[in-house]
Length: 91
Ligand SMILES: [Zn+2]
Image (cartoon, rainbow, N blue to C red):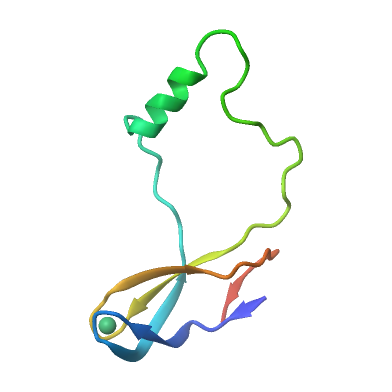
């Protein structure tokens, strides 16, 4: 599915509609020493199975996440479209 590279969106900082550049959002590397990561590791220790349920069937497609950057002030905003897509394309 195709999406525009530039879009007019509301900017909270500018308090009006401005042109935004759209990019595909990529999450950062998970932190090893984050509280949640440490808790998860602690819970998985020893006997007694997994702490969180393991999905046996993987979903084929992902819901894409985009980030919009305001061309006036540079404010970033992350947004999603709640649909599963094979391949989002920025045109
Ligand atoms: Zn702005």
